[in-house]
Length: 161
Image (cartoon, rainbow, N blue to C red):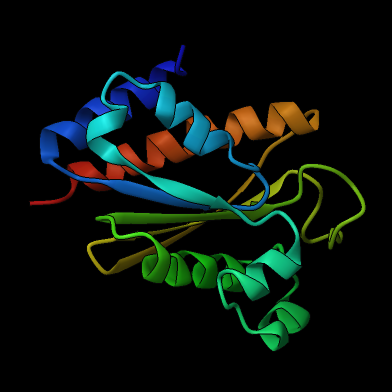
């Protein structure tokens, strides 16, 4: 059964006639999976790409290697780029990119600790970046991210005409 916030979000997207696609690194497909469980999934979900490894970001999504090297695979800049490049792969009204650090061993620093998540939404060509920090296990961080994305998305969709 889909997370309650996802069900609410899916209903809102269906009411507005909007479709969605994901480029997921840190959440590794969890967002797409949760949206697939929502009652309105067939009306709203177009698909997704899991780009957990930087090489997938480069080869499948065509994110420039120099951008990844300069900012790290888990950064606002790369998250924006994966959302933008997703548009060429999957036609939808909303494209969302997610990167971040759910476990140690990535690009964490004092300013970007484990639990830092970057979300970049493109809604009808409007770019909306977010950065959030969560605590807990990798699974806790992913669950918090999924809920957060649904909440942020509902806020943004409710602002549309």
